[in-house]
Length: 103
Image (cartoon, rainbow, N blue to C red; front, side, top):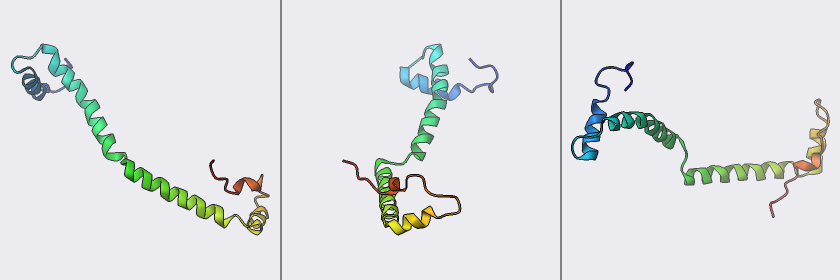
């Protein structure tokens, strides 16, 4: 039992322990439920922030479309020559900018 917490912090967990056991619960059960509470809260919060599979798929498809648009924009050799003439210096291996589809 954690002595730094307010008195009665286990009362709600004792109530749940009584429901689980349908009577008098073992003395350790309420404390264990209290310990799990933090993990459950964290898991629920993470689940709210994590995108669904459909949202993730939509996001990845948008990224794929953007990548294809970018590769189409830099495909002409004159665009790579223009980028190569930048004040930052030439692009190392400009051919790597050309889109290579996955097999």
